[in-house]
Amino acid sequence: MPAGRPAPAPMGASLLLTCNQSQPSGLFEFTGIRTRTPLVEVPEKAAAPASLLDRASYLVLEDGCDFSVDPEALAAFGVMKTRGRVTYYRRVAVSDGP
Image 1 (cartoon, rainbow, N blue to C red):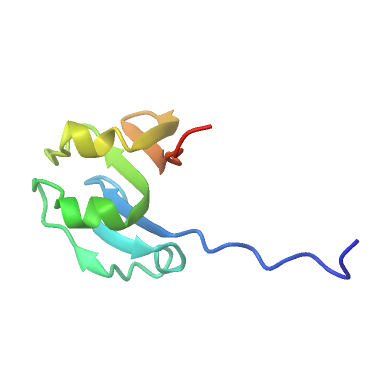
Image 2: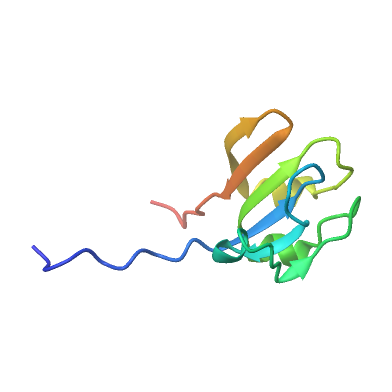
């Protein structure tokens, strides 16, 4: 048995595409969400750049905000929870086979 718990794995980046929340839309390090400091901002009513979706471990998408996400890119994420108009996604692990 180890002497202590291993360090937690980093949460990864989160792409927030919302219009009625307190955060600006953009790509955030998980720890930067509370301080509202995005690594990259995404303009309102924009298509989510594939490069940001590729970097995101999590995606928060609010319906009715006119953001668009390529369906093929969205397929890399699984739904964690939906609350009202906001859906929370997590990147799905890709298996290389059995």
